[in-house]
Length: 95
Ligand SMILES: [Zn+2]
Image (cartoon, rainbow, N blue to C red; front, side, top):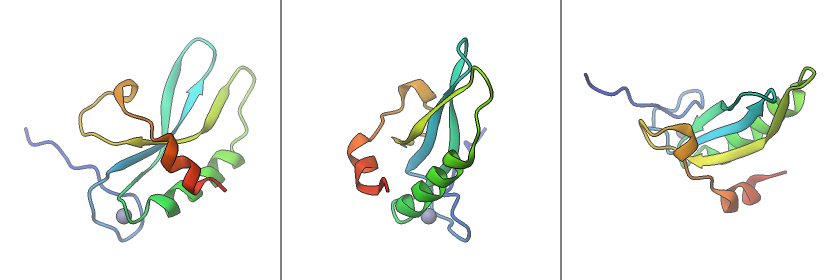
């Protein structure tokens, strides 16, 4: 079965995703990476800022915790917990 290529989520962009933009969500017992966007190198900044905005508009319910938005190096088929977080890149784009 051929793997489907995950693409940049920017409208009109057809490039394969290089980055995953996500925030760690937790309800105290369970946690997961909540994906906001995928991005190619060209749209990382735009998609990151959009994601930050949506993150700020989100109101967590009681017991829920949503961490700040992070940038991860996206690798097809790799589990979320194994993705490398790119702290240096985030600093460049954080508003
Ligand atoms: Zn793109």
